[in-house]
Image (tube, rainbow, N blue to C red; front, side, top):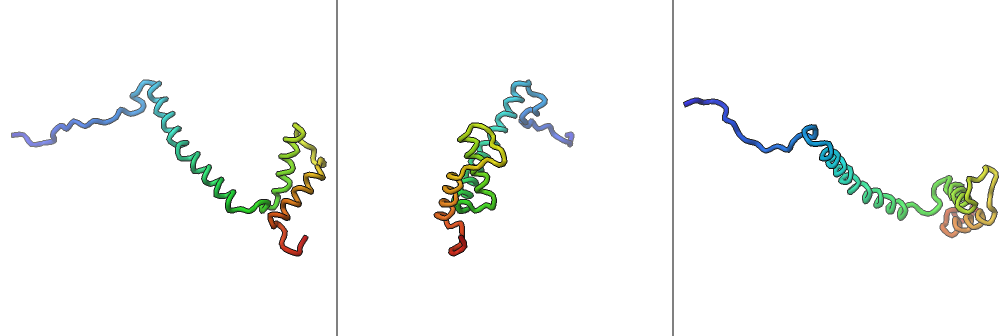
Length: 107
């Protein structure tokens, strides 16, 4: 009776290089969809949490960024550095006051 290793049949999925090109592309695409399947909801939750935790106007340069974006949307072009909208600035200041951006007695 011979002793030694015995052959065992094991089912193994073929390596990607053994697959036809279209199946390899499909696997890559499925992996990308799986990545986005959890990445997009995670990013959405992160943005919503940030929106709920951080009070309005609390970043030091938020008003100028808002004004710049509003000017682009309103005028349909990139504004120059000296372009301003006094009514918008007044509205932003009132919004900042309502959101208690300024400590009491400091404005």
